[in-house]
Amino acid sequence: MQILDLIDIIKLPFRKEKELYLSLRDIIGFYPRNIHYYQQALMHKSLGHREKGKPVNNERLEFLGDAVLDSVVGHIVYRHFPGKREGFLTNTRSKIVQRETLGRLAQEMGINQLIISNGRSSSHNSYMGGNAFEALVGAIYLDRGYDACMRFMEKRILKEIINIDKVAYKEVNFKSKLIEWSQKNRVKLDFRLLKQDKDQNGSPRFYYQVVLEGKVLGEKGEGYSKKEAQQQASKLTLQKLRKEPQFIDRVFGAKTERTKMEEMPTMAVPDTEEQQVDFIQESAPHPMPEQKQKARKAQTAERLERFDGTDPKPAPENNNEKPPRTRKKTMLEEVDELHLDDITAEGPSREDIIAAAEAAAFKEP
Image (cartoon, rainbow, N blue to C red):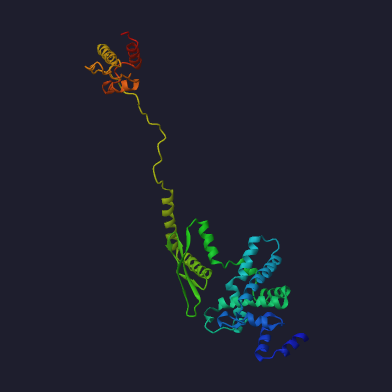
């Protein structure tokens, strides 16, 4: 024990602080310098403690410790596994810093026994203990710096408690394993949220169920976060698939039915052969007899001759009265009075009608 550490212990006014000081020495491997950081790291928000109107708990230190922990563990994993790819390193780090692992560490190291709360929030210590562990790392960072955090994780955690090699090569993410299995077998996978409520202490709880190809195959998983509930549901589903082959048969039976429906055409493919459509009538209409054609032409010429532009009314008896002024009818008026309804396509051609009209117009009186 260093002389400065002894002086710090002597300066502590209360016995509880001295006990905390010694307990932390057993947990983190060295003596704290500023005990107040560690006191706050172990103070749960359920206490509702406030100073100068502001809440005082371990949430801010938890945020800081989470970032520091990612950096420190990432550094350690990078050095421990030279040549490994980024995906392997990321997966290994996530296994170490995940909530479940940190909760078990807090329980094994005795951190949970030091947490100060209102006593009603201890129903899920893994959740609360994991947060306190991160807050403790944040306190170490503020008290001793980054190097102290590195020594704590390397010598106290990864050397004495966690075997980093076993963690790296052991798959503990049940959700990831289930997703990988479903993708390899092209099985449709869904996570269905059944309900969300709160426990007796007001902490939120989530209930999820795994659905494969529309079939519910596992018991519901529950947890204090969506991730935790989905992990539990995935684990139960994997266990059933391994122990009860009939569940696999149901899954692949449902998959077969689904793929059949997807592959079945929704309508018949249109025929590409051109249909033979005959737009020509089998027989043309019989031509009009020549005699009838001549009679029609004569009738038309006679009609045109009648329109000489004079008024058919008789002249007035009174000679003093001027006869009404005659107006030469326009071509349109003449055509309108022809009543072409009785003229069909079999009648005289347009050239014949024009020729007859010209002959009538230039006919001498």
